[in-house]
Length: 288
Image 1 (cartoon, rainbow, N blue to C red):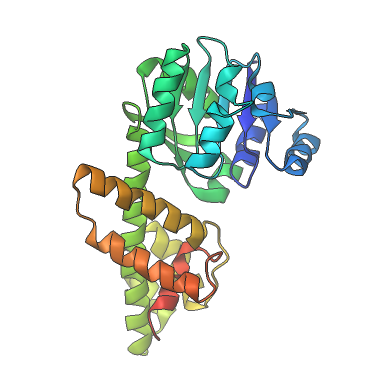
Image 2: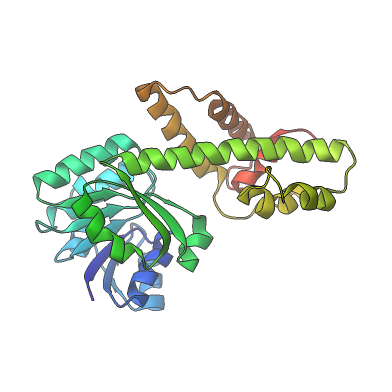
């Protein structure tokens, strides 16, 4: 049993922290909205802290899953932030999808205090978190990965050490670029099938067994065809992630024309009121 802290008990963090309790660890949580942390503690039996520092005090490892760069900086380096309370040798693993720049910033700040810091964004959505089947891409020193991996196995099906600090975040950007491209093609294909008066169920049966098959096709084609878009990861969050990728591309010189186009389409779906709909609502941008 390890003494752990988890900062952020939202739709992703709450089940991840719960899996750590189920694995036999002692977990203290902090959430900006205390009621969410208390609800988590009622369900899982862990403890609630008043501040990130209080949660991190004495913890062997601290995990975070918050909103954005500013949120992450506040809970780590801000007043009552976790880094100020952590002991040398402790692990900090961040599951938030943020910029590679802040991942490198935290790695540097943590190293100055003798901490092991890992940027470890996740893929798999709310269902993956609840079922303990997330994919985690990790950036940071090998020692930090070695400390984190056995703990993260409580809620992950795949954990890969992809490189140095920031590499986890840039790999997550790769993941989101891929999803954006697939959903762009899938949206056009669905509308094309509808315009051709095809039986959409038969089309799915025909094409999902070949090279066109994807997770998005198998899981979202039927719901997209029925204009159902309440299946997890929201467009608002996807636009945040694509913005991170586009910002990083300006830094590293990569060209992302398709990603920029899909991001523009998502902005238009937001303007239609679809910001909280899941990413497959991209199809709304393409006329029937």
